[in-house]
Image (cartoon, rainbow, N blue to C red; front, side):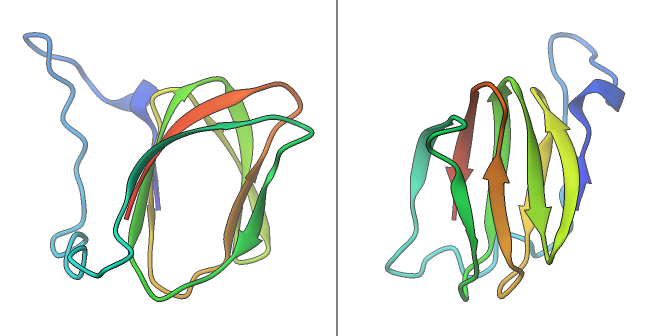
Length: 102
């Protein structure tokens, strides 16, 4: 699921992202992390899969999200919710900074 930040209304300095109930379940696994990443053409985030839920928040730039073999454009302000065992990766022609939680 991709939640487009550009499509959400901001009110009183807040922009709430509607997240599927239960999406954070299981985030107490030993490999849980909170990381800001930078992806470039020379440093793509290769497609992979694992058993944990993740959320990615695009901080800066534009990229292509590879999700279960299909490409989806993402941009600053987008929130991506990744389910366990979905194949996912990220690549860009410029540079993208993003936050990975999960």
